Amino acid sequence: MNSTQKPILEIKNLKMHFPIKKGIFGSVVGHVKAVDDVSLTVNEGEVVGLVGESGCGKSTVSRCIVRAYNPTAGEILLYDTAGQAVDLAKLPETSLHPYRRDVQMVFQDPFASLNPRMTLKQIIGEPMRNYGLYKGKAHEERIAYLLEAVGLRPEHMSRYPHAFSGGQRQRVGIARALALNPRLIICDEPVSALDVSVQAQILNLLRDLQSEFGYSYLFIAHDLSVVDYICDRVAVMYVGKIVETTDAETIFEKPQHPYTSALLSAIPKLNPRLRQLPVPLEGEIADPANAPSGCVFHPRCRYAEDRCRHEVPQLRETADNHVVRCHFAGELDFEEFEEVTGNNAVGAS
Image (cartoon, rainbow, N blue to C red):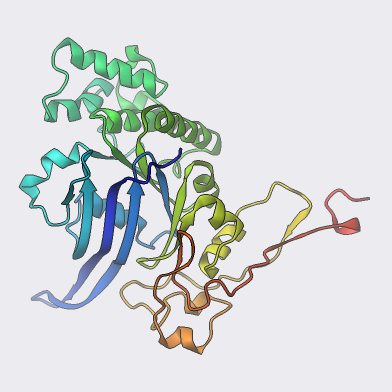
């Protein structure tokens, strides 16, 4: 899953603010800043993870990319194979159709994302009909090919979604996303609604498809162990802002933002000789309609100082391709685990 370092998607200073209206006349009294100045790049053949707690704005970013939402500000640059970019954020709705073929989405809930009144043949074939592709016999052959590619049997194309399990339905959702042979696939928490054993099957399927066809993924999740398994780079998001971005190996071995450190400490360790030390992360995620002053993470941060309460930190590069939004990035030492020895070790006698 090595990247060619040629960008396919570049998000610059993206904002999505939802107005808060009150009164009979619907006067705007504030805004929910769901996405607030997010910049992110996905290269060709690369899997980029976007992680954070529920409510931090991850899914809103994905909906802006596919233009389910019209962004408040910022750029969403989609590059073609020749390196020419078009700003999806500025295009009118009537001009989006050619570019939606290149960007497809796998949704979180396989039960809600499939039309229960349509057969698998209709569900997977609908994108191709919309673009006039694979007509006649080639249409059915393409559907059969896609079903086999995601581990389902072609003879099941006449069945309805209710006849399949959650994992199988998600495979149908993946097949639908592949129907137009897109260049970028947005996976919006594609395994969070599935059993753990089924999650592994879907993740292996996504990896195999990426390896075989060279797809680029923007993989949205809140489970960092899942991100570690599939992603090349990781961007950590908190209350509408990116707080840390680097390659997956570095972010798991040497995080530089306290929020990233706290998320990592929640991952169970398989080594019984490693004891997890407490990493306090008190309170709830901040309200994007009334975010704290200064650093939005400071009310939950054990390293916060007076500067954090008043001064907004900027993204800065602390190492090669490692960008962090923290006043003390590179200065903090997160010791979250210690080796347990002697009588303290698990299983010691």
